[in-house]
Structure formats: C-alpha cells, structure tokens
Amino acid sequence: MSEGPEKSAQTGQGAAKGNKQQGKGKETSAEAQAAKDLRAQRKAEKAARRAVKVQESGKSTVVPEHAPASSSATAPQTARQQQQQQQQQQQQQQGKQSRNSSASNQSGANANVGGAVVPSAAAMQSDLLDKRVGLFRHLEITKRSGTADAGKDIHPAILALTLQFASYTVIGSSARCLATLRAFQAVIKDYRTPSGTTLSRNLTMHLSRQIDFLKTARPLSITMGNAIRWLKQEISVVSIDISDDRARDSLVEKIETFIRDKLEIAGRVIVQSAVTQISNGDVLLTFAKSAVVEQVFVEAHSRGIQFKVVVVDTRPLYEGKEMVKRLTRAGIQCEYVLISGLSYVLDDITSVFLGAHAVLSNGQLYSRVGTALIAMSAKRKNVPVIVCCECLKFSNRVQLDSVTFNELGSPDDLVNISIDSTPKLGPLKNWRETQNLKLLNILYDLTPPEYIKKIVTEVGSLPPSSVPVIIREYSSSQVEL
Image (cartoon, rainbow, N blue to C red; front, side, top):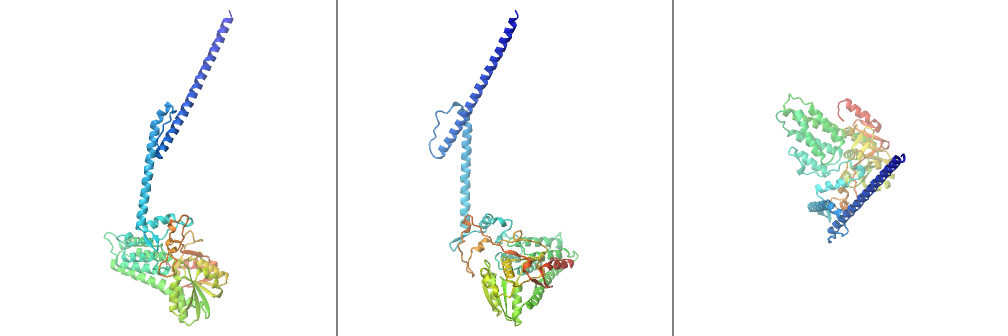
C-alpha cells in the first residue's frame, strides 16, 4: 500500500521534468526563429541598398527572388531612405551650383592685371581668412577701405586720410600722427553739437566713430593712440558754461600747440642732440626711412661735416628709395643696398642711426621689420646703434616677442617684384589658387635693449633701461603717454 504514493510522486516529478524540457524546446525554437528573422531583415536591407546603388548608376533594379516575406515589412523604411538620399543629393548639387555661381561672380568682378587675376575687395577678404599663417591668425589683416564703407557722419578729411593710410601714401609713426591731428582739427571746426546734449560728451562719441573708420585701413600706431587719449582728455574737461564756438576754437588751438611741442620742437631738439654723434669721415647706416633721422643727416651736412650714408632697404614698400632721393638732393653722398647685402657693408660702418615706431617700457624697440636684424648684426661688429625717438612714442606696454602684438600687411603687396612705380607681378601672382601656399607680410619687429647703445629724445640721450623713468615723469606731470 505504501508504494502507491511514492510512484505517484515519481510520476509527478517526471511530468514536471517533461514540461520543463518542452518549455526549453519552445524557447530555443523561438530564439532560432528570431535570429532567422533578423538575418532575413538584414538581407532585405542589403538588397535595398544595392538596388539604390544600381538606380544611381543608371542601371535597372533587380529584386532578388530569394528575398524573404519579412522584407515586405521593411519596404516603407527603405523607401524613406531612398527619398532622404535623393534629397541629400539634390541639396549637394544645389550647393555646388551656388558655389560655382558665386565663384564665377567673384571672378567676373576681379580684374586681370598682367595676366594675373586680381580679386575684388570682398573676395580678397574672404580668401585671406583661409590663407593666414597659423601663428599669426589672431592678427588682423589691413583692409582696402573705400568710400562705400563710410557712414554719413564720417568727415571728408577722415575719409581722405583713411584712403591715404590704406594705400601707404602716408607712412611713418610721426607722419601718421600729424596727419590724424590735422584731420581732427577739420572735424572739430565743422562739428555742431546736437540739441539736448553737451559738446564734451557728444564730441567724444563723434570722434570715436571717426577713429573706428580710420582703423579699417590700418591699426592705430602707438603715437596716434597717445595723441588720441590726450585729445579725449582735453575734450572731457571742456566747461559746459562756454559757447560751442569758443570750445571748438580752444580745442583747435590746443591741438596746434600739441603738434608744435610734441612733434615739431621735439624733433628739432633730437636733431641738435644727435648731430653731436657724427664726426668727419664717418660712414653711417640707416634703415628704410625715418623723418627725424633724415633731419639729423641734413643738419650734419649743413654744418660742414663730411660723412657718407648707407641706406638699407627691403621689400615691399621700399621706403629707403625716398630716403636716398632726399639725401642726395641735399648733397649727401649715399649708397643704397637691400637688406640681403647687409653683411657686405657693415665692415665700413662707424654708427647706425635708426628711427622708431615705439619704445616699450621694458626697453624694447618696436620698429619696421628688419630693424632687429640690423641692430643685432651691428652689435656683432661692435658698431654702436643710436635710436632717435620722441617721448610721445614711449609706451607703457610690455612686450617680449613680435607675435603677440603686431600688424599684418596685405599679402598681395609681396606679389609685386618691381622696384619702381610700375607694378610687375612675379611668380606669386596666382598664390591664392595654389594649395599649401601662404604669404606673410609682417610690418614690425622687436629689437632687444641690449643691442641699443642709446636713445636720443627731446629730454636727452638715455639708455633703454631709463625708458620707465621718462614714462613715470610724464605721468606725474599729467601728460598722457
């Protein structure tokens, strides 16, 4: 009697095991069916992609006979993919057509000079953004401003000056500062204060718009920046109790006094001091063109001192040619050499006279590119380097290299290989269309103070280490530098 329950329990366990095995068999069969459906779906998608490729190549589509029935479920998806691909192809074709049309328009607007395509202003600026050297990408490239870029409130004197800056008709730190102050005199004379405001507030804003337009041609020089800060300070202290006519006349007179004291008289004092550094039989070297250095040589010649001047020049502006013309007209014996031949003339040089764009507070000389090479080469030959510079060119800025802050000229200036006024395009005439070719036209460099013997200023001759003292003295006397 006891065997009955044991047998029934065993039969129950056997039935449970059988049910588990059946369940496992169902699961394996379901997994196999899912894997089979997945493979079929992939085959269908592959066949659809192949059909799209055949359609694009212009061949007839062939639907494979062995495609499974599950591919019909993916047909709407493949149709949507085909539509998306067709839309993308149409957009790409439209983009290519628009780029081709814009390129043709730009080339149509370009001029053909000497067999080379000279791009328009808009095309030039867009191309230059991609053609900048990586190390100097943070620097702006000078633009060729025109009358079309000027606003209604831009004074004609500022417009003319901007065009002169852009074409390098007016170059040199002192010359640019003098021309800017003269233009500001014309702006102030024609200025009328609008109703509801004061001259001291509105004139400053009006001048700021003129200055912003000047910057479109070239960045402001250190001398221009110092003069502009001084002028804005003078405008801000104009009393509101005086009439506009008296205020305008007072400002024009102050600008004239500033020009006389800081530029004209300072230049004459520098000349009188620097002439004492020249003796009979000296062979002097100078670089490019400096107005104050030119006056030093002319004054020394007028005093009867017998000397010779070697003018070193470089591309692309060839400023030294004008220097040679002026000196020879004054009766001074001159030699003209490019900077590539500097080492061949240094053996006979007794002194080097250089101009300056600015002198920084750490004694660094910031001047036209090539100045550092000349000063270093002269130092190796134990030739003294004398810098003639007005105190207006002193700056509180501290700079250790020529990369952080500099000015980029137009790369197209390097294309012209002519040394006279007639342009002649050289091998670089199609540099914009040449891949992996970039032109770099740096305008200034830094000369370390250890290569400079002395700096001649209107307050006397001093070493580069004394520049911070002069800046501090001017600041204490409330003269903005």
